[in-house]
Amino acid sequence: ILYMDTDVVLLTNLDGLWQLIDDTVAFQWGKMMCAGFVLLNVPRLNDIWTMARQAPLQEISNRDHHLGDQTILVAINETFPDAVGILPEGWDLTITYYWERKYSPYDK
Image (cartoon, rainbow, N blue to C red; front, side, top):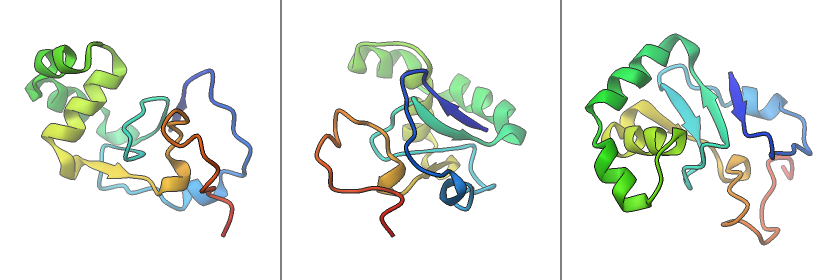
């Protein structure tokens, strides 16, 4: 399942994204760890909650000054990096970091 925040606008075909799906990980997102654009591996949703219970959520929340879906996914990414897949740069939709036009998933 592709989860997107309501303020995400796609200007490309998603066919290339579907080819990147990795069934061995619980979820995939960009290296900037933005919860606004995430591929969730539905059969592993229970694994996500299990990992979240084992992750240092309060510590990460205090460090990052927020608590929410982003904190849960960041905690899993940091605590269980092998359970998380990183999408290629063109699919990392953290616009505040990638404000310069230097990449696009559809350039190839």
